[in-house]
Length: 421
Image (cartoon, rainbow, N blue to C red):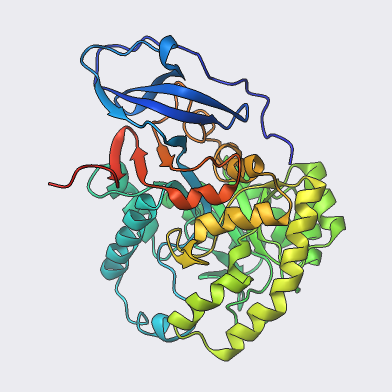
């Protein structure tokens, strides 16, 4: 996969910050995802919530009053990004049925707990792609205001779908879609998400269908772009993908049955793919057993998984821009690790190099979210969202399984090596 940006490496750049709160992470190897090279015996100097300097220890001046954290023997990477998340996730089965009468207040509290666990797992930024009743915006305000902890949030609000489709917010006709989108943007959406085909979790409708009319699709994409908002689509259908590509959609989620024709058009147009490959590969069945998933759902998962895997391999080979997303909670156990980490492992298994898989979870999605000046790399000026590993991810992306330290915005939220009180 080609780099998303020609941005030069930020290593050895020294910034002279104003007086403030300094923290210095010392002695680690910093993985510079921009250059693909490690910086050994590095120092990362943090001023408040941003990185002030990064480079070899002898090239970074540490203020006398800085708090030093010894990270010797560790590998530092940017905080992970997960770009397909539902913090209020409910799936068919016993666990979902238990939430049928969940109030909005209860749901926000459940989402806050899921956000906290996601952050502890090393995911410092998420894109929410379908929540209910504005609860996502309430949680984002609470996190941004420091009233609770969790990842940085971008959100698409509610999923917009034609009546009977794979979504919470149903709309029909071009102006029905326009109104629904404007309501989500008014509430705070920084993305719009359409459902332009069926889904695995649906008990009706075909994943390969294309239920929206041309006029509906054209207006939906146009309205999002007129409001300065990017638009993505839940989609497993090649027919629906070609329809949406004709009108300039920005991205697709899943892509279960995409053909090479679709993938090559995506490559040519710079359209994003968030594969969520963990949702139908063998490691997910333990999760489905835990939540009491019905047989009909498992049958749909099995029937989709082979095509989905082939599609991911082809997308990597063709060079489609891929951002990591899971459609499971970021911290959810999967194949002996978390869903986020196993998603990256599957990218490597499907053909990415370890660096490409790491970039798919850091720098590349930062560009998709238009946050490349804030997150996605350990570089001066970006937020101090930093994760430490005990192994080198450039050797094998499975090193992500060794996360034992998480920092968000200069605040240490997890440190497994800290002395117990």
